[in-house]
Image 1 (cartoon, one colour):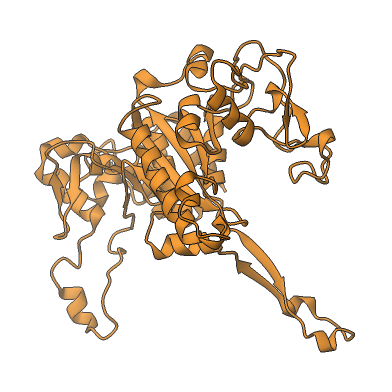
Image 2 (image 1 turned 135 degrees about the vertical axis):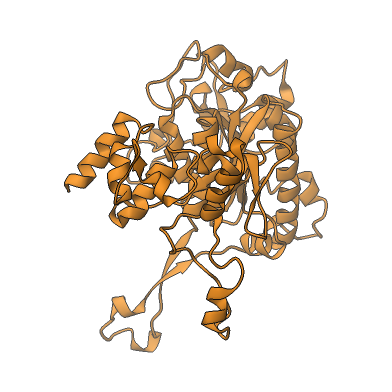
Length: 430
């Protein structure tokens, strides 16, 4: 999960913040599911069918978003599939649009996103779908027992939202969508609800897929970390306690009996059995090795002779040392940072970097390092800011003087912003 999060943040570093956050939830009453059920069966009886249909719908959604550009041309995307404890799968998408198609003003939000109940005469089918799939609650005072309200008094998702005649950019990460007060309410799940209860949606996608499909605009960079943490929060968990009923009257050691388990529903199990992707990002992200001199990893079989392993061809090579070698041999490489190398070069099995015929195939990211790791951390800082190094000594050289440590070099190296220098100096003082 952490690696996926770091890959996603590498896309943000390269292409900017996400513009659209989209959630699609499986509809167990899709015609493709219901028509295949035997008499007396329910969708819960056929998790295999539910999974296959949802996967087909997900692939269609991905094609519409990234190939047909129905929301605009997408520069990069991330999606992850999750499974609710009741079993229904859902997918979260984060879309980073090309510069020309980024959402920059309320008028553009209104072109893609609606938070109102459609007109009954103009859009009867869309209106039915909004009332069925896109109405939150009822919760709050209308239903205090609703999960989003229980033990809180108010809805944790902030419904009902305020009326607004126009869409405006909110103070937080999301806009305040247009929700006009028209004086009409609709009966939904036993309560009268109005535009304040509508979950934002895209009319085209809702009409096409006939399921809960929430579409939100990301209005601020503050949303990025929250959204990525949300979609990569990890597996559902369940706490289990087992005890012998015949000894129920005796003392119970709750600590010994406690079990922390992973909750896997039948649809999730089948999703994995079928080999469907649980997550995907595009462009792909390559994780670049980071190590101090002669401290790279070498893999070998436990029965192999260590001397032969050490002396075999290529044992002393890694992505990083091959990067140094490429800088020595290719003048065009000398102006490229290590993290940007996968955009211009491909990593070959022979442990060499080969020039791409067309740039932009991958995004690179250097594996993370904590300040407590010392020299390895400062090596990473230098690699992120200094291009063209042909060896480790080049990274430690500042103004023609080779310093004894990467730490000292990172503190004084040109090309590193003053903000980074300030952080490094504070770390050196600790």
